[in-house]
Length: 179
Image (tube, rainbow, N blue to C red; front, side, top):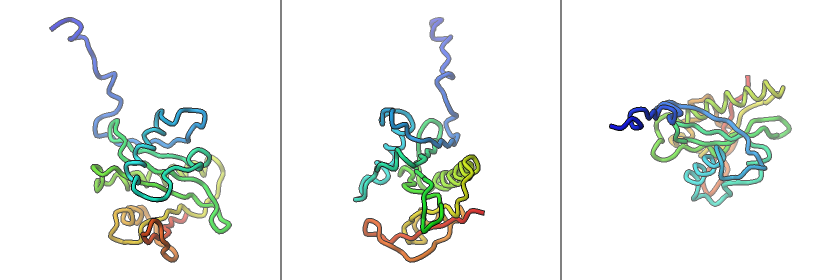
């Protein structure tokens, strides 16, 4: 073995332990390339998770209002979502949208982990910005057996109001009141 081969240390290339979960929250820099960094990962995961839906995957809110989140296992992104402060019937809420986990990582609690961290992120931003949010809200498939429904219920959300159609599927508003 040569001296160069023996002295090579690959640990400097290893960013996170292979099974370590980590969470990143960020805003999109409108002056930066959409193909760089975490925004690139978020776009890829959203396309992979929701590519077949008829409604738009991306909209101007992505760069003007939304906080984007990613969950990583080691260095691999496995879940993505976005959330934003907005108004609903005259009260300020935090709206969670486009939460998805890649197929091969579903049913392993990554969605629950991500949603839990989103709740923490919303609360931290509320405190930092002096906001008074009534609730954290999401639109979820209206089916108690659906994984998304189960994830939101595990995190304390409750269904509220009548169901409504989204892409030919009944959805319901899930609400976590801020305490």
